[in-house]
Amino acid sequence: MTTNLNEQGFDGPLAWQTPGTRPAYLRWVTWHLAKSLGWVALWWGTLYLTVLLPLAAVVPMTLVLLVIMFLALLAFGRLSRWRRMRRILTTYPWRQQSRAVRITGGKEALFVLPDPDSPEKTVSLKLAAGLFRIWSREALKDYDDELWYAGDPRFACVVAKPGPQSLSCLAQPTAYNPRTSPRRKGLSPEARRRARAIGARVAD
Image (cartoon, rainbow, N blue to C red; front, side, top):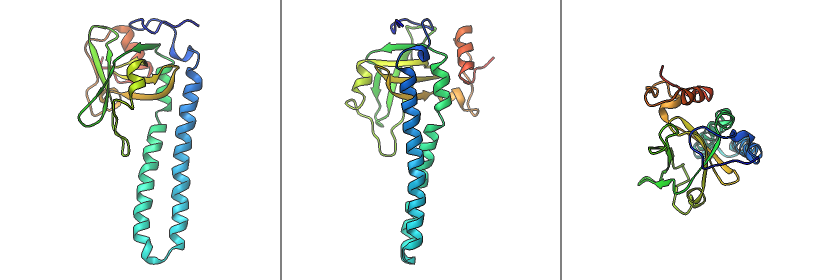
């Protein structure tokens, strides 16, 4: 299949139909499922060890258990995006954008992408720094040289290195958070249809 990643708007074959997308998605799911189950196994192992240790060790080990539980919840939170990611990949085509990455003062990554309805305008999606992860220009160099993305940056996107590989799912706060006002203006009928197809909130 020939895919023109430099097209604009919503034209072109869906990302899910592009060779390499499904294996990359399955690798993402497998990796995050393994991480989530790994944290659970570590929690139970630490709990077992805590029971065997002297009473004086219970307080520090309880703190360790709380930290592991927190990391497990974060891992399951990332894994829970599997359905959203699949919806995006089966709704939008891949696009290509160079020099799209910005690093904020807080070491968060911003992906600056064109508005599908008005390509001369741009929209930013944030990839937050993690508990043990601070983004740098060097760490995101492959994304900046040639970023693949599928989606509508006004709602949500899957970003990837060329291939595709190293998938990540990003979303605007207004797309899924019911405590925010959904986007209303500047949306074509096709943009609204596709946004609703991925479960994003769109004002009538």
